[in-house]
Image (cartoon, rainbow, N blue to C red; front, side):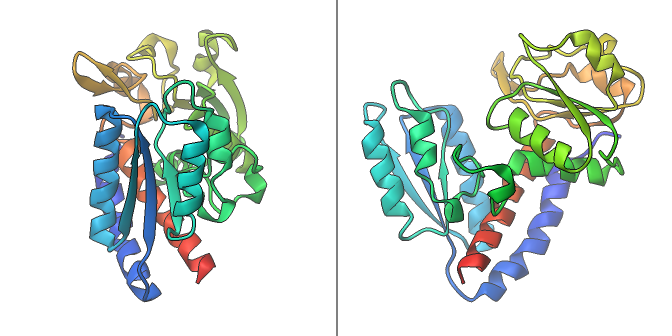
Length: 267
């Protein structure tokens, strides 16, 4: 089964629209953009289009790539007074202290659930990509409880939050990275979540027949957006998400589901 993330996201927006309408107040999403990266610009455009269809006001702050850490933090503090949720687009240019910047996002405004000082069990919402992974598994009738799950990559946007959420749902989770685990371990997995950012690194011969494969990675190769899995892997899986069009659209929809929760808590 190849899951259509765009169609799933559309279903979510249909459900979200009346919930936003019922709030009876303007919901604002603050987005901090540092520098001028065309990839980041494309992500912001996608989020802005989704916001517009839900009646969410986007408050965007553009900063030079020469900005200091303290200046980024000051902008977050200003945004927190007017926005219901705040996103800092990553990656941030060196030498900005990313941890310090993300730690400045108030927990009650942390749409991406990315403030490193907050434990997962204390968050009001969970990371959008992790929520998207779980949603896609559910749409494919795959229950992670007691399943052997391998998460490839342990980054703050995909691997770490996906592993944490799946473990909380009863999965037996382990990591595979360049320095941890063996690629041969993938053949023992019931579910694989990819987030390494290594184009087409995973091949069909690395998988067992019938595995559920969720590719949450995005890289650019020859001018195209690609995932960690070779598309040929689809033939060996029971569940497969393409890149693009799989996890990405669902993760964006989850941002607005999170924003709704934060806005409802504040009302």
